[in-house]
Image (cartoon, rainbow, N blue to C red; front, side, top):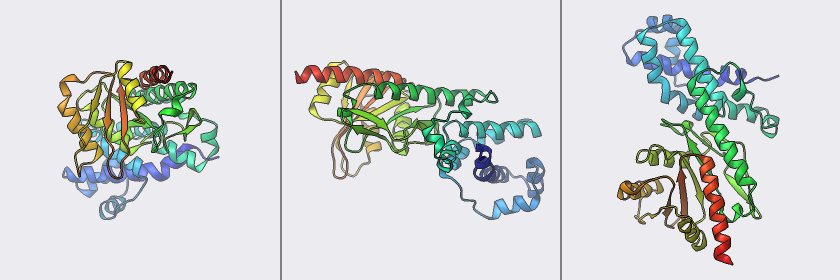
Length: 312
């Protein structure tokens, strides 16, 4: 028996204490004060301050994104129960398709094949943040299920394979964005995800959607597809606004897309599509953006139908 609590104890708790210690130290607290606040020994505090703790990158990134807010809340009116609340809330969030969930499924591969969702259904999860994460995972599962049921989606898969993402409302890091780890592969005319949706499943596309949300906050979901002429024509035919990025030498894909967003900011509305031209070492792709992943799936179905008409 290896419950997710075992992963949390080894991978989450030490990192959380480490960042709490450093955040409190930055705010001028002495080691003895930190020791008392966190309920750990002064020797442990000294150890956290003198040695760099290395842990799971996804869990670490998740903690970094929230540590400032947590400490602010703790210091506004400290109580031991409030510290426990924040600790357990973060742990629950990481168990809902986050870093703890991913590590747990690696430790017990059967959980992946069984589509385990115990933590998402836990009666202990009462926080709004946890509820939003569970909702995001469910939206993604619905969208993937719809895409898998459709014949023809495989024809849209690019050489770098396909992925779809969905960001939380106030997403700041890749750990706030659900994606498919390992991407979505083509199987003849259909598709198959390499794994179940998880937070932090695609660093690149997560960064892209967070950047897009700066210009259109409710544009929280996105899929990448091939950019051949038939697909381009079909996207335009179904009425999706279509923007072509300038091919700027020595610029990353993120920077090229941002330039395109700045250029067309007044025209942006859901849904819309962005074409990033081919460049050395980079395949030409179309990114289709909308509010929800289910909306993305519906747009893909429309595009497939339009492609069939074009080929007739």
